[in-house]
Length: 114
Image 1 (cartoon, rainbow, N blue to C red):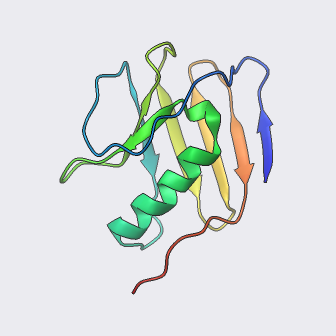
Image 2 (image 1 turned 60 degrees about the vertical axis):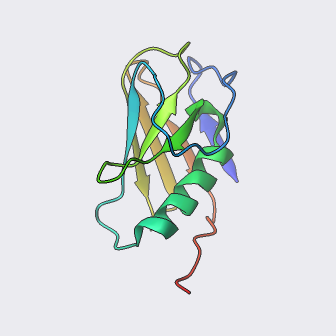
């Protein structure tokens, strides 16, 4: 895995385990994966692996019925975060108010349909 982080980003935030309940947080990083057809269960597993592999997210993946997939961020982190995942390039682009970007290149283990 290759992880490149901008200098103004602090990777001190702890990740919690997967939690399907909505939590109270200052903002949500919305994960965009609209260009790729993948069923919701496989997508949740794949996104959780990504969240777990990138400490800078500082949050947990949440999913409510009929709602977008979101990452709940650590209350100590401020600003609005946007997370975009490029499946074909195996790349994650985080762009928030700190103008910090993180690119992660890795082969994600997306489960096959059973």
